[in-house]
Length: 271
Image (spheres, helix red, strand yellow):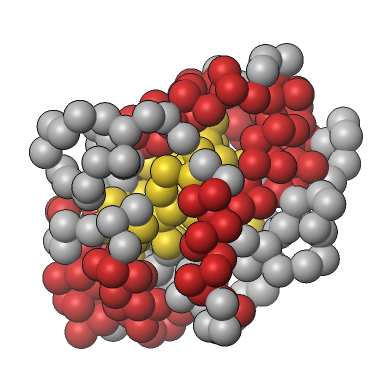
């Protein structure tokens, strides 16, 4: 693999990229090096570890700085929206300009847990969208049981000009088409392996293949046959295999397609 760089280096051979993991979480504290070793052994070329508040954003940057195949996002998850004061946003703006950062996220709305008041969530979401525009980075969107409000805010903020992806896409095909009209990518988790004939399966079958991404959301949402256990980036290949089956293409054909999709989603030429 080439070393981490934003210059036009010789591309590495296409491999799997986990576009969304939470490597900083305590679930990995005891065996993080082994978790990473298993990921590389399974052919992963890179992992993007996600910031959900200031502390996890700092830790994501630390992990990215220590490993050339880990990259970071920085953001304020809707659960943390009530903490989105001016000092927090000012620090987030500084962190977002670090060279290891490839997106602003995870940001958005969560009307399932409602750990922050909905008005706080909406205000935080808008301010993070504006920050992403300011630093010229794509966005990683969290949308849980808040589809219409998420789409409304994205429309009002003209978020198609910013670009990015819907993490752990949970909408139906009708919603997917609206996202695709704005050129957003749809990122798929191990939930794809849970139930045949699900709305997510329909989305994966019908969406243009150049709009799809893969993620683990580790340590959450482990795919079959690990459902109910701690998820980790090495398990990405199980979701990839299910995606290849649904699309009716060989797994080895899917890998370079998703690799290029990830390059386009995060505006990179290689990983």
